[in-house]
Length: 258
Image 1 (cartoon, rainbow, N blue to C red):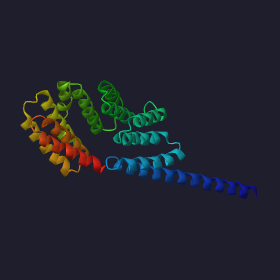
Image 2 (image 1 turned 180 degrees about the horizontal axis):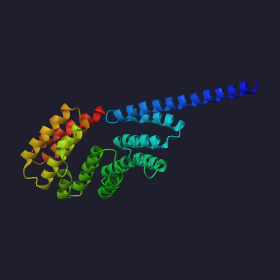
Image 3 (image 1 turned 180 degrees about the vertical axis):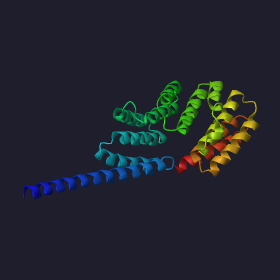
């Protein structure tokens, strides 16, 4: 009888353990799916992206999965940044940082996002400092590292350091880069910075960037296309105001689609 009782207790514990494991797996699976949906929506609809990530955080919280909570918060901060809520984005990043360990795999993304926030607020020295912090920790992939270098080059040229900015980008081996969007963005920045350094040749810069713009549009990289429109608007500002206005309006069209 005692043996039967012990067996029954063991069975109940096993069933409870299996139930808890299944619930944990279910919560994680739901959260991971919502996270991926949020990331995919980021450059299409930042509000829906933010809400998807908030749902993901709810499921991650049930499992005290602080690493994935902080990772979701970083993407939320990017959604806030895209809407111009820089203070809100910075607050979200601070919240994420409090949950992260020193060796968290998403630290580079947090630092990069903070750099982008400072860049958008014209705080270029601070942006560079954050990008350098991002480059000093473990980075998920070479592609991510090149993206951070591209961001850093933007901060450099915004400070008028055209040669330093070009030096960063021209050291990149674009032939080994499979991400077409990133490759086109780097090419665009190289041509634009060349023009900034010696803006006597508008026609050459315009021709090069227009070709890159076409590639961006063919690849549905509307976010990247916006930077090309911005560069083309500036290149034509003095010599062809009508064309400059055309490109500025194209920027506005893309902004309205978001």
